Image (tube, rainbow, N blue to C red; front, side):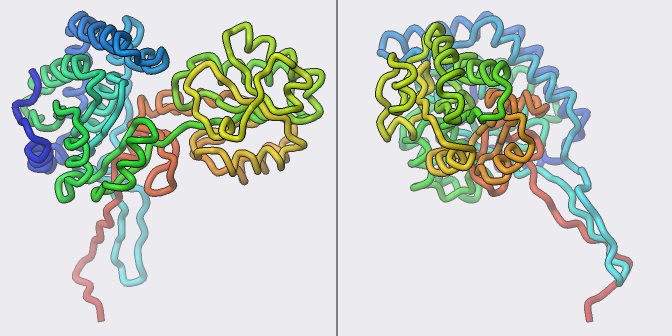
Amino acid sequence: MTTTVQSVSEVCRAAADAAAEVAVLSTQDKDRVLLAMADAVERHAEQIVRANADDVAAARASGVSSTLCDRLTLNERRMAGLSAAIRTIAALPDPVGEVVTGWTRPNGILIQQVREPLGVVAVIYEARPNVTAEVAALCVKTGNCAVLRGSSMAMATNRAVLAAIQEGIAEVDEMPAAAVQLIDDPSRDAALELMRAKGFVDLLVPRGGPELIASVEANATVPTVIDGAGNCHVYIDTAADRRIATDVAINAKTSRPSVCNAMETLLVHRDLAHDWLPGVLDELALLGVRIKGDETVRAHWPRAEAATESDWDTEYLDLVLAVRVVDDAEAAIRHIRRHGTANAEAIVTADIQTARRFTQLVDAGSVFVNTSTRYSDGGEFGYGVEIGVSTQKLHARGPMGLAALTTVKNVVWGNGQIRV
C-alpha cells in the first residue's frame, strides 16, 4: 500500500522524524530490508508491469515521444534488472561508519573523519519508474530516508513499485515505514513545496529535463545536487584506431539513445574526414540515425542535413546526431568546453599524451578514453545503481553511488586535553 500521509509537508516531517532511527540501523538490518524489498519486487512484478502498461498506453495516447515512452517502460528484462540491482546494493560494503582518514595531533588528540547518513534525501524525477526502486535501495543502504516525487506520467507504476517496496520494509521490524515515501501529488506546487522543505530535506536531487532543473535552481532552499543534461561528445583523433573509433561511435549513439550518457555530438579530426567519416556515417544512417553536419561533413557525406549553431547545444535523446570536423584535439576540447554539459565526454586515440591532455582539460564528471560514454552509469562503475549523475562539482561529481549519500563527521578523541 502507499503511504497514508497526504501533504508534502507531512511526508517530509515523517521522514525527518524517522531519520535518526534509520541512521543507526546495523548493516545486517539494512541488508535484510534490501533483500526483502528485492523479493517483494519480484512477487509484485506482474502487477507492476500491468500498471506500467497503463501508464505507457496513456503516454502514447497523449502524444508523448518515443524517447520518453522508452524511459517509462518496464518490461520483463528491466523488471529483472530492478530486483538484481537491489540485491547488488545489499552485497556492497556499507559506507556508514567508515573511517575515511584519521590522524593524531601533537597534543595526543585523535581526529577521525567518519561517514554518516545525510538524513532525508528527496528526488524529483520524470518518466523513469525504475528510479523509485533504485533510490529507495540506495537510501536504505546508506541509512537515509527517501522522499520520492515522480511525474504524473508514471504515477500508476510508481505506486505499484512503492507498494512492493513497503511490503519488503514491513518484514523487518527495525525499519520504520516512513523510511521510503512517495508523494502522490504530481503538481508543480507540490514540487515547489518539496524544493522549499528546509529543515526536513537534507539533499534534493532533480532528475529531469531543462525546465525541472531551471525550477530547482531558481526555487530550491534545500541543498541540491543537479542531475543535469547530457550533451555528450565523442572526439575521434587522428591517432585513433579506426575499428575502435567506429565501434565506440556506434555504441555511444545507438545502444540506447534516450539516456543522458548517449553521444549527441561526434567530433572528428580533419585527417579522418575523407577516409573514415563517410563509412561510419553510412553505418549510423543504416541504424536509423539522422545526421546533422557542418560544411566539411556535408562535403564528404552529402546526405547530412545542415547543422545549425543550436544543434551543438542540443541533447536530442533520440536517433539524431550532430557531427563536426575539427582541426585537432585542441579544437575538440574548445568545442566541448563551450557546448558540453559536464556529464560524460570521450576521446578515441592511440596517442597517450593527447589522451592525457584531453582528460585534464575537458570539464566533465566522467571522461572516457577509447571506450563509450554509455559507461557513465552507477551500475557500470560498480556502485550498484546511481541516484543521479552530478554535473556539478560539490559535493559529488559524475555517477552518484552510496558514498555520495553520506557526509563526513569529524570525531575527536581525547583523554582530558584542554585548549590553552
